[in-house]
Length: 265
Image: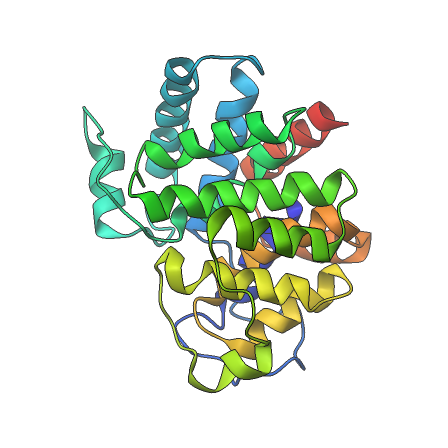
């Protein structure tokens, strides 16, 4: 979870094309904060920890709705889209066909909790479908969780690249240098998932992954949450970076993070 949360915090001050597209910057500084990416990652983690690992679709989705509404209402100013706010406040929340990258930024807990790639993808799909039930939104969530599962179970970057291209049809042929000149803030899965994966694939460490995100710019908090979640599964997160991030999160977020790492061991 720290992989996604720290990515969110580091990228928060460069969101909406506010950075200068550089790899040279302090990871933490004035203007850093956690956004809806962190809030919903915590919500998904808490929901998935509440149900058994073999829980049914109905059980998983009920828990997801419960905790996403709970966390969304507890942090109403975290930066959600208008349709998601309406969903959070609804007495009868229904999926609304979104293909935004919110499905990918919150799914990382699903990448760690299950013993097979098939189950990982199934639960990831359900985490998307409660809101982002457009095929592209579902694909965004499944691809991130699958990449995390593969990274934590020993797959190489080349194997992960091949799997993501083959299974999800994302074009991962463009380098960051090719992406960077014209890339800008967009929030749909189609134009953020490939870029987030490439930031991970061209890195050799967790920190370098985050620096790659800021190098191309765009929706930096969400790209860094996505890329950072996969990078954590590949390399882990250095303890000094975790300690630096703790200044920016509150006790409720830390509580869920501690519980989650206790569960996954």
